[in-house]
Length: 620
Image 1: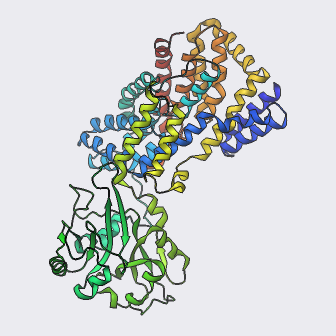
Image 2 (image 1 turned 30 degrees about the vertical axis):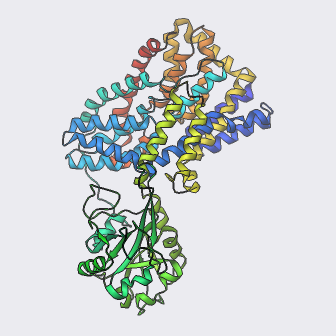
Image 3 (image 1 turned 90 degrees about the vertical axis):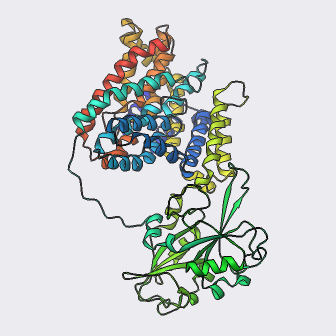
């Protein structure tokens, strides 16, 4: 027992110190339990096969797909647009929308998504962004209390309850608690943010080293010189190759790409196929050709081949597109700089070999302050020229392998990961709704962990995530290993009698004053520990102790375990207690004192209200 307690205390010390990664600390603790033969290998490794851990992996993938398809950004932007220029409306809507998103995906991901949206809205409303970013971080944690899958501590106490043989919690068992948290947060933060998060001196904006896709489109004025034609049924272009049509030779046009819409009859199953304009590509009915050149040449080409000239400033995926917008999915654009040593210097673009060797097209050349966009085939490239190239993201990234020939500006694959597959948003929404329905309704014979894994696999199979590698990248492996390695600690505490000893001491020390006092002790102990240890680790450590303490005094364990979950999630007094708090620190120009001034009162008030509310929702 004493060895187990020593390992537990050492783990807590290293968690608080923060110099060693939390997942490494958890693995070392697990190895300690194995070395001292407190746990068998089967018991020690059982955490990695725990349904809660598997469910968390699936939820990371589902959340990543929601981001990749732009679904969350689309919904949040439209809802926040209702605020107009009212500072109070914006404040309330930011908290409500953030909490709603945080109910289904990780609070870290929620803040990462909402941060640029809120900064932009605050600027439009002439509102000091520091007044809303800290409440944004807090709201993401509050939203996690709305559902079973909202935050890791919720899943931890569910696991402790089911392992002890108690009735499992339902998907929305947490919703009343979450609503109280959100209401309390809004009421308390409205005055606190006005009093303590006032105007600050703005720091000089750091110069960005890269350009977004939209900035490149505007800089090279692609939308002004880009035209789209559709191959209509009965057009002589259907069935012909690009070479046979003589688009460049006869009409002096540059065919940028061919875009095909798959399954257009189904809004949910719609997909986009982008192809570079290979000379041997055979055109089909319905193909959309992206052409660059003079408008009169486009008109002549469309008339000769009986093609439909489309609205050139609206993409085919939108009926209400913004002027000058372009969509990038599989194919993107990037800039490359030609140094004096490049073999391309004094070589015409048509003879560069970029298309043949790397499958990329040159769309434009920036030469000092001049932009060359037409007649590029015979244009000779100069030292210092910046070429705007287009191609599949992986082909553009291959250009990095020739640093003596050119320098790729920006990171193509990193840029590709930020491109949202917005045409997949309805499909991602449908999958998520089905997953939630399976978890909500008992008459659907699918276990929650099964529903989550099915949803995660469907997100990959249906293209809501680009590939399996993209799915793996959405998973926060540090959190997964931390939980999986620390879950056996509760087995060790119970096996050696340490959990019973700790809970008996807690029950004897506070239980004699009544269950409310014991509940307060459990809540504020959890809240205090979370200021120094991650909320997941705190919940894993204290949940079994809280359960045994409740059993010692003959009370229901539910309010005590909810106190652990809420106390672990509602920690606001430190910028480092939760990842969302740390994420907004730089953007809001906050100091540690700001979190003390605003977060500590909120944390104390939240604790007092929870101690009063939890026994009403879950009687002793």
